[in-house]
Length: 416
Image (cartoon, rainbow, N blue to C red):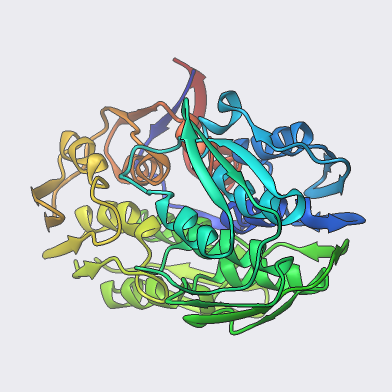
């Protein structure tokens, strides 16, 4: 098991290239199960979850290859079982339910694992798919689904579930008739999935809004498609530049998709400017704490909550972070406190008292974004920080230590 070691205090200066989006690539990879013909995906990040998904697609009957950010997939004779050994490490694996039911009428998928940041019940997926004609049972930790043919339905989600919207969006493409998804999630990654499906021949309207309409088609073809850049990785490196009072240029960087994050960073005093060759992030003065509430898109993303908390700990004044999406996503706060941060937790709210001098310490990552926040704090801290359990980090950040060391950070990877 690896750890990251950081000697803090270096100012970051230079250029960082933002990778393709993991959260966009994963559902698109599962959607490729439904395509008849070759699918080529460009700008795919070389992450653990991507390689796990490709292994799962191979077990499900696809041929695939990964070379230089490009993935090639051809669906063959599909099987229907997603085994626990692969699914247990990745919550996104439940996204094969919709495509398998739509394509071959049956699916057996182990209940998924992933980060311990709170419950993400799949019952919303199952209830919606039942409205389209699927039947489910749970047996020995597996979801077993069957249908003769999915049919269009009018589905209203209890809340804007990202995974549920993605699963139903994919399933509806090959269903008979028209499906309407109300109270859908609006994340850019869902828009990217819809655009990929449209490139394969799907008929979809309203993606990016709360009401999506899908007219089922008889088949989907292959295509070549470029996956969007990772807005959460981009936001994380914006914070890295800010927390070190640095000057960094982010290339291949999304901008409109980060509007809520950029607004908060600017409110704190960070200079952020969209330029011809990327997005420049610069800090010359002390930053100020703000209040942050996580919300579904286009609100402030829960996946940036831990990172902005680390930045607030190194800023002046006081602020509040309220988490409304996941009920167990403040585990990084206790590790930041060990580094000298002034944080007081009360339920789903964290009160941050800025101005403290962070000091290096051994810390332990509890989930993907918590890992990133501890690395960010280590960049600012005095002395050495060791971030343990970075297998979480490797699920969502491509070569973070290489990207950071390339702009001046004193950071390296070691075996624990």
